[in-house]
Image (cartoon, rainbow, N blue to C red; front, side, top):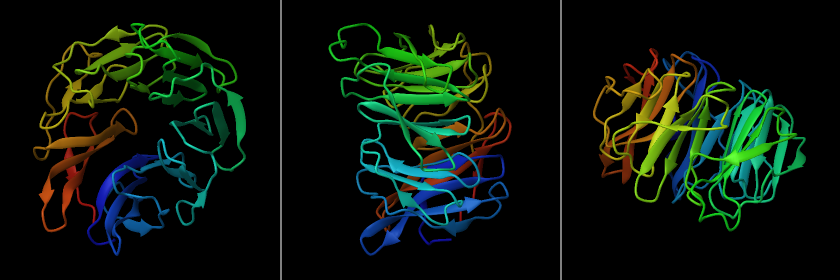
Amino acid sequence: MPAGFEPVSFTAVSERDFWLLGTVPCHSGRCTAIVRTRDGGRSFAATHAPPLPTSATTPELRFADRLDGFAFILWRGLFYATHDGGASWQRLALGRVLGFATGAGNVYVVTSRRLEYSRVSANVWHTRSLPFTSDGSALDLAAHGANLWLLGTRPGKVSLPNDELARSSDAGRTFVTGAGPCVPGLGGELAPTSTRVVWAVCPTGMSGGASRSTNGGISFARLRTPPLVNSAQLAPASKSAAVLARGVGARLLRTIDGGNTWNSPKTPERATDIMWVGFTDARVGAALAQTGYDASAKTEVTVLWRTTDGGATWSKVRVG
């Protein structure tokens, strides 16, 4: 294990196999590092990491299976792929990646003008036209199997009440567009748990809001939640269960009835902020929680929490 490892990104392909991308002290300040577990977090081992910058940016790591993974920084021209479980990485010239998703054995990235896709196991990329032209504001791409959802804003549409949501059921070959659940120009995040159920969390400029679709994204119903900040995160475990991270200093909330009621789950300690939260399946999930500041290392202390009961209780995983 590299000394001084601080996680910033989590990805899993099963309940036992997951990786953490993080930073470690190095001659230039802090450098990227990746650790992997094959036994559900009982032990970790370091693997190779691509040379992604760590200052004023957050690298992301996503594995589609045990061999094929991707490391990147959204809105930057830095995108790497591995096909040997992280033993080696290749930088790909895809330009500025604005959205990323995997599904049905494919990897998809959105740039400002096109949708690129490839099989996850091979760097053989093909191009499709975007279903709508973006105005340059935040985009979000989500996938579940062969279904794709692209959320964004058309040029000149910021005065409308909703942004644009394009839906595909054939791996991006064709799309149907309609109103999205978020405010134009401000972005949002989609999280499908099936071809029918899509959860969403959206900034509004003053606060955040959450919603849920049960018809594949054709329409969304606003969820009744406590006040949310613009950076709130919503992590669904199933069609009816989800965990909500409301912002700095706020406790996690959990629903098991599709967002009608929310309760606080049991966590191992109080977090100052939840940097990321997500689920591998309906029972197993993870969260990266900030719990304080290390003055000697001049960095936030970030720990890994894990749940095996759908988010009802969380435990701390020792990394290192």
